[in-house]
Length: 330
Image 1 (cartoon, rainbow, N blue to C red):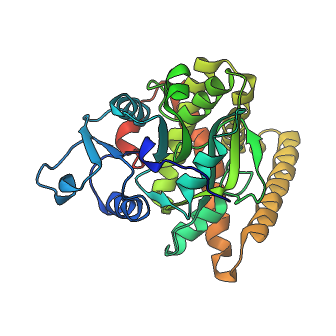
Image 2: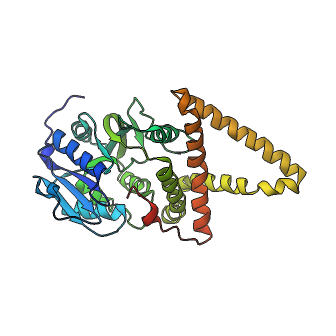
Image 3: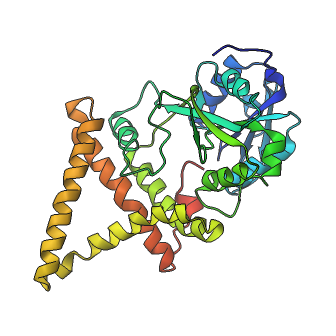
């Protein structure tokens, strides 16, 4: 993409995190290397004032204590003095010409926000690769921006790990909803589009995003399931009801004992199960590039598909998952 009159100094890169750890350090180093003159604001639970990163030019650290990731972003935005905002996660880093391409697209009057592809880290272990591939399945993610789509398209929302927009549009939309455990980017996208403008996905606005291991993937999906209820209550948008598919499927699994008492249900249950595992098998084949990863991807799809239903059911039954504690990518 051609770059024209892009002022990188008028954009603040915002990175929420829990503490200063290796992923965040890597993200900071990549940002500084690509954008040495672009301001960076990092919002943390706790800040070690002896850390050498505090001495780096153009980086502002804000200590907030344990608050939601949405509230961290809102606090960071209030502290900025630039006209543009670029959001990253602490376990991500910019791809080639990330800011330049995003800011160029924002010059179009009809565009209110832009983001793009999430690429895998070049070095990932076996489970991280399997989880990354499983996350590309429609059985796991209803709206998916990890597919590396090759064409620009308008969309309802963009993941906040790769989001670029004007500060005034962020403020007009009311910022991110700090009451939501997860899905704050969905909610924010809805309010952005009320301006009548469009949100654009572009394959040229790329970031590299570290995939989770299986343990943290399970935790993420569990919290996602819990957050579905709050998202539905908050937005009253029929689209979000699609996420309840995970709940219905988990309830179906729990109905297994009924096959011993009701012959008709036994037939229905077995046929649906065969069909389901056939779909998972086909999806796994589609996503498998190396034979050795087949079983890992198959299992990761099952985890990604079943776990949200557990979280949703626990929320409905009144169990407290202590989401802020178990959600690592925070």
